[in-house]
Image 1 (cartoon, one colour):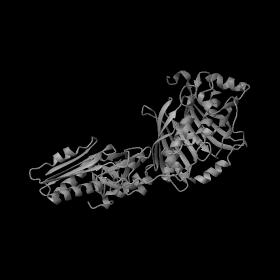
Image 2 (cartoon, chains in turn orange, purple):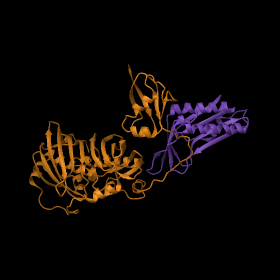
Image 3 (tube, chains in turn blue, green):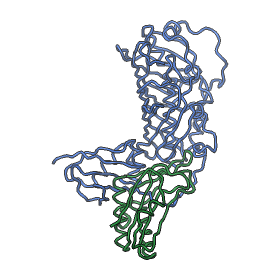
Image 4 (cartoon, rainbow over the protein chains, first blue to last red):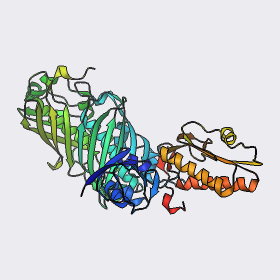
Length: 396
Length: 139
């Protein structure tokens, strides 16, 4: 039996969820409208709205019944419930702490404030949020440190899932993978988050980050748990690192090995590093140890350190570990960072330890762990970075 | 048959739509304007080609059902701020009963059948209004 590939146009909520105004589906010859809707429903982001909404297929600009047989070359469109000519606006009240923060009736959580989190659009399963990449988020080569982009994406995808559950849950991130497509300058960024699939206790999410020139600069996927807010808060309360939660500026000497192996390659410690309260503890060829200070500003609504900041710390440990093996004048922009969040962690001091798994000619693979005061691992990451001469870095 | 159906991004004008149904045999012209209310603005999205065809069919069928002289409908897409019109319908007929009934049928069917969606935009609270599935309605 022959196969045909048919384009299906998407509109409104379906277009937003799929992040595309059409999808291509491959169907057997003789397939019906029902088969086509099923096939579209397998597109990431569309299974939930298609199962929840009464969608109708238009074939060649006419509404079609489910058993209509499709032919190659048909113009297909998936039509969610129409509301165009409706003159009634049924605005239901959105209340509670989540919606209060989204709609500006209450201040956003600390981690959101630090990132300049400004919601532009929040609806079930979809968010569009503006962020401010501040000068203090820049790494030594003058571009935004990837971890902060990860934090922005995390703070965009989570709310898409929370909104889909009417704002009554919390969605601690289990795993976050970010691909860094382009270097990012300081300035305004727009992130979009969408729910790919939502089960009873786990959600799969996707996000993208767009710069002022409308270029996609980073994409992410994440897996989150779905828990009642009260339980998330209770867990975070027991997650205090057990170390002093405040710390004065460090005095004394930085470890000479760290200066020799890392700082000599990139010069000054970057602003991004300062925001994370980092202090180099030591380095040897292929590895680095860095202490971080998780401050109150990094906390999410449940009172735990937002995952993106933990990712930033891990990134900021893996970079130095890679630098120990490079020539002077080479840098290692992160291409991809995947972080698993093993336990919620409260404010306090954390230790990052990274090692190079493999160094090729132009790419280096690293891994890192973050441990709390009790030596318990709270997060683990793997990273892929490119090795480039400093002069190849994008112009300021 | 004098059928006028338009989907446009430009602001709608009642006068222009009424002008489209002017007819020497018409003793009555009824116009209807649907207007954004209670929300900062509405954002309309359409499957434009199909929406225009569908509205033209609805208008033509209303002319036939009610013996209208002419009928017209325009729908705006994109952002429609508070108090501006998103849809305008006009119907002309020899007598007012026909004109009222024809205009009523056109707006009710556009609402139920035209592939047009609207999103309420209030601060960060954008959301798609969940309407009706077109096939649930008698076509």
